[in-house]
Image 1 (cartoon, rainbow, N blue to C red):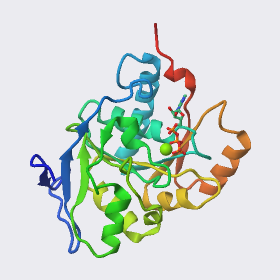
Image 2: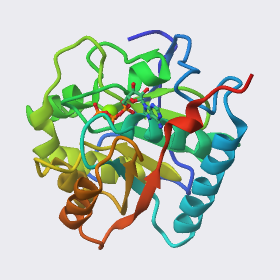
Image 3: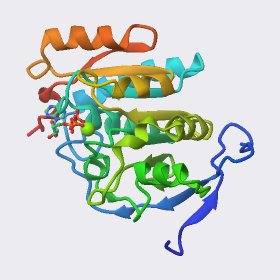
Length: 251
Ligand SMILES: Nc1ncnc2c1ncn2[C@@H]1O[C@H](COP(=O)(O)OP(=O)(O)OP(=O)(O)O)[C@@H](O)[C@H]1O
Ligand SMILES: [Mg+2]
């Protein structure tokens, strides 16, 4: 591991005391790469109205924080409907003013993209599913998260490494989210999509609330209805219509 890595216990709400057998958190700085400003409206000179809409969503999420709800899964009825893009945007906007500490966790192990979306490299061997797989073998290392800034940490999959999609079904996955959430003001989980598997329901069980992303010309109404039924309304916060127009650049 690089010399600049450091070990600390993230604790923004008083001292966090890991229980017996729980690991602290190791925070390593990101290998910086240029973020994709075509995809992320919070970076670069992209449409300001999209940022305004994101801030409205941030306000709603911050209100939930006051109710003791601070872990959010981001899902969609099917693949490719904007979950990872929206999850990264939401994490950025929540951490924007540095009022809050945010952890963005990637739980879509079968289709990882968070490192690419945010333009950084996950340290070798520290992809989330790899870390879970090591815990499944009895390893007690600290959870390793990457710092993209003082207020934003990320626990993502490595881009070009073998990963372990089955790790989602290990109790270590839920334990990791429960444990890590205690050190942050917000935990945003990029979840698998809903239809066709129960994977999104695994994330649903591990978080306080789910946000469903849909796109008006991509998501079918029947799929959205079936997906909302599969999730149920116990934890579903709402549907975010996240449209292509928000990605248009202003001249
Ligand atoms: N609102 C949007 N408008 C236009 N393009 C978008 C929008 N959101 C995402 N995209 C693009 O659509 C593609 C899929 O987005 P993304 O990877 O965020 O979806 P996903 O739901 O996470 O996919 P997967 O199911 O593979 O995890 C990407 O190329 C992304 O740039
Ligand atoms: Mg994705």
